[in-house]
Structure formats: structure tokens, C-alpha cells
Image 1 (tube, rainbow, N blue to C red):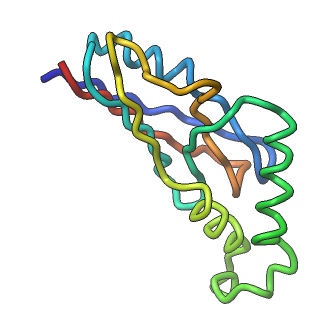
Image 2 (image 1 turned 180 degrees about the vertical axis):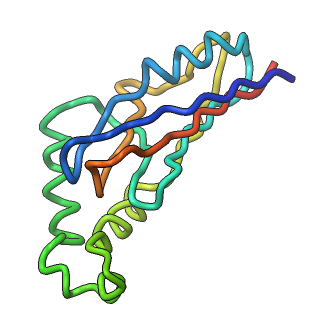
Length: 139
């Protein structure tokens, strides 16, 4: 079995944002030489996410508004977690909704997506470096 491990680092300048990482995941598959297997992409921080959806800016704005309604950042005093000196309880909750990781099948050396599917890094407590693990395994 072959495997390839890569770490991507992001420093999103806003508190919340989305970065399309599909090309970087596809590059990891190419470098691995895996023809049949799996790609795992996971956020290595508890206030960030990796998810699959459409690369459409209106949808991304809808996500931001929806997540902010579900877990508003302010007032920060509404969250017990923030009583520890943090101000990012909302980011933990947003990550929980959006998920930690994705697994995508590799078929004939390519990510086997459905129509419009792409992979995104979701940031919910930005303005500092965070990592994503890319792991490719297979034959």
C-alpha cells in the first residue's frame, strides 16, 4: 500500500472564511501515485473545518450568515467557554456543525466527486496559522 502525507497551512485574515483546497488535494493524489484508494483531509484545529460542497460565492455567504445565526460571536459573554478568557466559543460550535474532515474515494488516480463537489477549508476563528492534514492511502 502507498501513502502520502501533506500539511497545508492557512492564515485566513478574517474571523470566518472559506478556502477551496481541491487543487491541493488533487496534487497530493497525483504525487502519491495512488490509483485506487482514499483521501482524508482534516482540520487540525478545533475551530476550523474541512467540508465538501459547491464552489459558489452566494452559497458561501449563505453559510456565513446561517452559521452566525446558529452560533453568533457576540455577545461573547453568552458562552461559558468564554469565561476562561477565550472569545471563540462560537467558532467551536460552528466547526461542530460543519464537520472535522472529509474522505473522498480515489478511482483511476483521481478524486471521485459527484457533480459540483469540491473540498473547502472552513475557518471560524481566523487571523492565525492553522493546519490541515492531507493523507492519501491506497494502491
